[in-house]
Length: 154
Image (tube, rainbow, N blue to C red; front, side, top):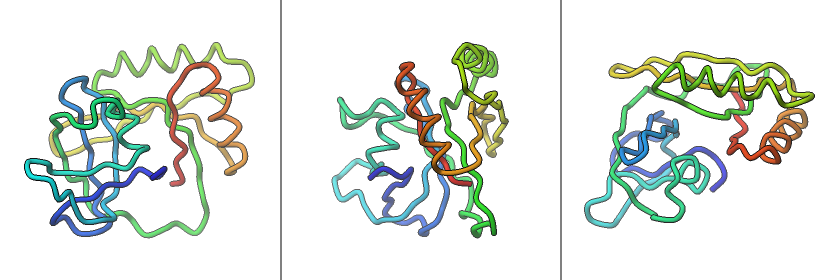
């Protein structure tokens, strides 16, 4: 429920998918870990965390675009954590968010990274963390400042 996961009828488990809400342009990357949806006309069921990032909690459904990114890579020997604050298709919007984050006291510098799919480029804004505890602290600080965040283990 709180991981960035989704259900799909036929994609192999572990497939990474970029989901875009076509009503607001927000995107989220999820991993397929379940089967469904079993309601006619629906192509994907998102976890609560993924639906929240796409602003789908109230309406429940929306037209979406799926981009298959590939299989989840095998886990690395060490863990790396980050707190994602946004993912944008317009680089200037991502830069604006990075600038906005610099005003928050005690926060490590935000990182802007580019993620390319076959059809789009996404600009992700993340704050790196060295441990799960640090990621939790950063997430609390950002949430208190009004940001929607997700903690990632990469």
